[in-house]
Length: 364
Length: 47
Image (cartoon, rainbow over all chains, first blue to last red):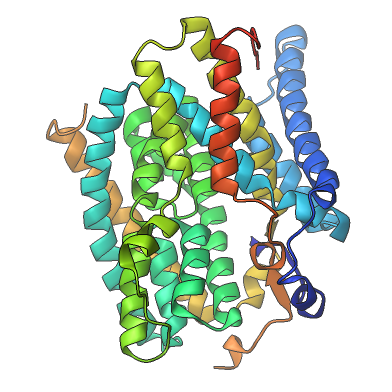
């Protein structure tokens, strides 16, 4: 359960060549095609259940899109022609997050976002410490341990990619860390909603938990959305708050590895923080600010909400398409064991933090 | 450490560099579409 991969010999040539826009068209079409198929399947099963009184489980388009993507990726594989376009799933994801700003009043963002920031700070300290400790116990290469700690504590692949340029790890370490983080994210997709239902969690509490505990942004939002659309919304807010820490954590590791003489020294730290800051958060805040200020009418806010759903459609398909179950076993057991133990710890700690917040009236 | 020997594959994220800044493009498209909706150039979007 991991990233879609391609042979290194091919990839090595492609590494420094940006993909052309035209080359992304087939993959983008595939993303939308799978997403639309998921939406169609949701509609068909709903109609069949209603008209023919069939006892079909109600599966939302979110899950259909992921399942279809997983099916394609793990049976036929993703052909080379589609891969540049499939990589654009990140654009659709971030565009969806920007539009979701229309569904938040700024005071909610400040209150819950502020609470998230406080919970994220606790989660960060604990998860960085535990992942580093586990990496030492299982004798992982130090930079792989750093990457796993960064990926699991902040925002998964984005954080690992941001750290790649800053701490100069081996590419193999980067690949392994990404694979481990995505594998664990895929497991969360199917375990978190079940746990949430088992514990009778509210939509908001569950969404906060998914946003705080699931590493990769895409998996985090999907994990929230599989529980309910409200939960998905709160997962986005918590995850966005968490992502805003990315620059500080990566900078910390960059300074550490530079002090060890194993990475370049960061000359301008303020510029470094700005470069690593996820700028799409500014778009999310801008739309939320405009919505709070009455810039949009209610029908217009509905349209913006629907645009976010359209943007998430190909993003969810992309989550399935870039997950290859065979690669789970190909990454070696130690990084995975470290990841699993660390993630279980993070999931339990964040669950405890969310419960504490909601039982003590800190959250509303 | 045999399990950590290089695999022969590379994640999608390392294999394809998109020809644009994803974050800035998402913000640009988002704000542009929001403006089109606000000024009724795009009327209604359903899902």
